Amino acid sequence: MESSSVMLLVLIAAVLLLLVLIIKAKLNAFVALIVTCIFVGMASGMELPKIVTSIEAGMASTLGFLATIVGFGTILGKMLEVSGGAECLARTLLDRMGPERAPWVMTLVGLIAGIPVFFEVGFVLLFPLVFIVAREAKLSLLYVGVPLAVSLMVVHCMVPPHPAAFAITSILGADVGKVILYALIIGAPSAVIAGPVWSGFISSRCQSGHLPERDVEAPTPYDQLPGFGITLFTVLLPLFIMVGKTLSVLILPPDSPALPAIEFFGSPLVALLISVFFAYYTLGFARGKTKNELQKLTDNCFGPIAGILLIIGAGGAFNQLLIDSGLGKTFADTLISLHMNPVFMAWLIAFLLHLAIGSATVAMISSAGMVLPMLASFPEISPEIIVLAIGSGAIGPCHVNDSSFWFIKEFLGISLPDMFKSFTMACMIASFVSLTIIMVVTFVF
Image 1: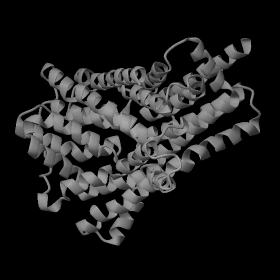
Image 2 (image 1 turned 90 degrees about the horizontal axis):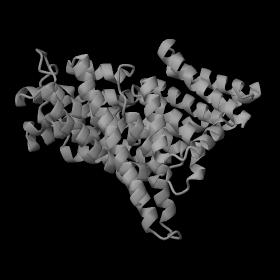
Image 3 (image 1 turned 180 degrees about the vertical axis):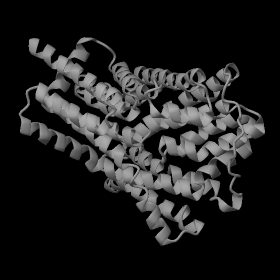
Image 4 (image 1 turned 90 degrees about the vertical axis):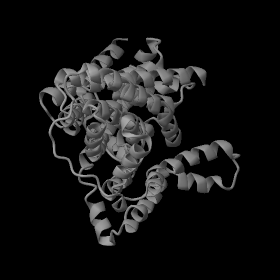
């Protein structure tokens, strides 16, 4: 018992050290995680060479699979960006549904266009349309922009192939097709309630977020944009393939001769590779781009994701240290002794870590390492549900220590109090709504 208490104190100290290094010392999350890994190893009594071996093994096991997936996903996002595909999706839906339904349209666009692009990239891409539509429909920027931001955040935290969502899917051994399917089913109503419903209620109670004088580029002529149908199909193709594999495995008999081929083509690596080549044609060659342009575009994709990959790799190293040091098992035993629902526990850990650290990615990766040893004691809970619970928890507390908070604030021109009332509260609502749906699904099925 005494040994267990000491191990728990080491884990608490490790989390506090991580917070201090990131928040107070302003260290990069990658560096802070590696320092914390070394602390965990030394404080738990591991041999010094074993600490280095564990860090290397954790980095390798996490990035060995994930780096390829994130690389392909980044190419897809870049193709959507440079081709005008994101603008095409948004403008077509706005034309068909009407500017007065702009908050609903931006929620839908965020859920679709957010799949292959990072949070910040998606918002920058679509903000000119937010501004134009808000001006034409005489709506506040807050009312139109917050639904877009929240839907992008939901996808960022819950839907692979986004890096953190994919990483915890891999760490927890979940089926990626099921995670995607469940995440979209759970995430969509969460984004709707937190987006157009909440922003519609709160926008009239906020003093800021109204249209300032600002120059915005004119919309691209339709004849210079790709078609709506082919753009939508290109964005959703990797999801179709991966979810199709999952459904086929459930439907076909185990001895079906088609299963090996389905497993191969439906694997995330091959599915995304196929989708990249498809995007090269539909959003590249078909739009008049040359091979040299596509090569340069691809080369330029990988620089911005290096930092994200290093953070995720360091998170994998932290997970490995928790396993090798025995801290993970001790923490799992403690959680089990509390008799708390494991789904709620996974959500709560991610929620609190994001609240403290200010990074959904770090919160999700760290939470997965803490929760993983607990799963064996709850075989009735699928790993897919735990993945979604962690993602749901990481959506919530987006406030002043999160760069996304300031990013959205400056673009929408919202005051600090109104930012808390609108965007931060919207993220909290999305987090609690998605948790509620996850708990219902867990009890029903």
